[in-house]
Image (tube, rainbow, N blue to C red; front, side, top):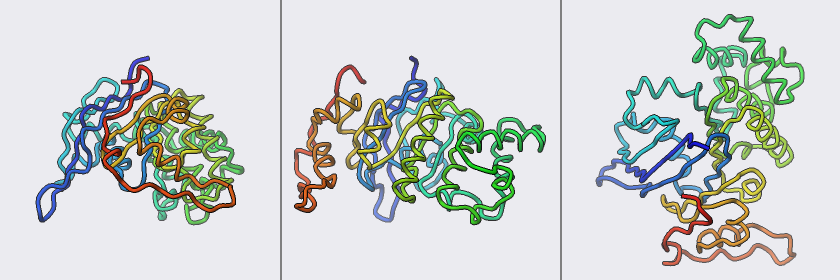
Length: 289
């Protein structure tokens, strides 16, 4: 399979009063068409800013300095005109944000927001056609009474319902790449599990590649084909999900797994302190590159 996303030697630095602060240090990762890849790490490790660079958002701010290669479907995103990068968002690549309630516009109905997304790909699509397509997508994410939901505002829906709306909206234009930033984190465990099952089935049906950003190792193990582990802006381990979980080779990966609470009756395990071992060379499993 050809790569839909190919990132090489990506660096990011933010400008501040004391000069540049580098937060990404030579990130490299790839995603094949139709593949589910996870980017795993603790808060502040660089996961979300990586997704924003893929979307072309940070390249257009005066406070960030981005370098390296980001190729999407054979096209150099870094070299694109901002207008061309914007045209990719919501059409060929989409994102599901962490908090669905704050990601939807509270002043527009769900139906109007669906229409705006669909008009990015088909500006002349009629209102009837938009409603029909939106209804179809809401049914795919198991939302009952989609007509009522299309007429509703986000604040009139539950968190779980808004999360399903976000997934449906992200997939309505059949994007080639879906970026999912901690989807379902704000929801209770049962709704989160149901949301992830829905997303898994939908991306399978549509052949969409996924970059799944998470710190939840249990979810990653069930969802992803391959895993990249990021620590302090560096990829420290990569490989097939089973290989990484069965034989983690990097100290940080092992620390992440050891930090997962276990029902043992003896409390939470101790998390090891940061040491030089965490800065060891990257560990690769198999033939992943």
